[in-house]
Each structure stands twice: as C-alpha cells, then as structure tokens.
Image (cartoon, rainbow, N blue to C red; front, side, top):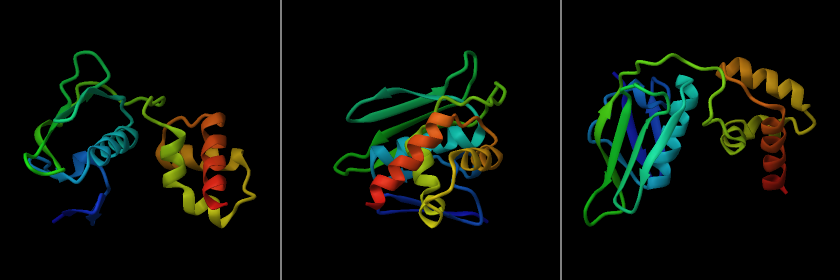
Length: 158
C-alpha cells in the first residue's frame, strides 16, 4: 500500500514515485499553491506529457493536458479559513500519446532534482550531465537547460 504525506510544503511518498498518477488524489491537500504547481510540473515531466495551468487565482488552480481532445484535468480549490489547497476534481485518463519534447521541462526543475549530483562533482561537463538526465527522464534536455541548471546550483552553493 502506498502512503502519501504532505508535511510543511513537502510531498513525500513511501514505496512509490512522487507523481500524481501513482495514488488516488481526490481530497488530497497541498500546503501552498506553489507546491501544487510543482507537483503538476513534476507529473508532466515524469509522465512525458505537456500539462497547462489554465486558471490560477487566489481561490483556485486548474490544470489540463496541453493536447487537444485529451480528457486529463485536475482542479484544486483553497480550503476556507486555511492557506491550503485541496484537490476537488481529478480525471487521470490521458487520450494522448507521450512526447519526447515536454514543455514543462525547465532548468529550475533540473537544478532542484540534480543539485546533489552537481554539488558532489562540480567539474562535471554539461554533455555528460545532459546524457544522464535524458536517459533518466526519457525526455529532451537541451544544452542550454543543462547549462542553466548547472549555473544555478553553482550560484546557490556560493
């Protein structure tokens, strides 16, 4: 059985991956809107599909698949009298195919995911990192994205 805990802005899961499709999500609570957005972006990268945030205001945030005629969507609303956001509607069915070029892949996400590898070997070249990231994630990582991810971890370290 998979157990999910949302504690202090961190999404942690035992015996599973940190993706939205790996568990039942109805009524799941996120401590901030940013945490929910990050979970949607991580899910997009790990599922190799482009997801769009379609509505984002103080009380709600909606996301849907970027492909036309796809049924995947997720809606989260702010819990009254709290700062948390709760998933109200989730349709996990994708009718579209996976893609190698995912628009949700950002250098900031790469930097957060691979920060420990960059810190342990700061002289590692970009080409080697890029090949490893592409094999690990099975999506395209551009040379510029890899360079910006490495640079941002170096500036954080200093």
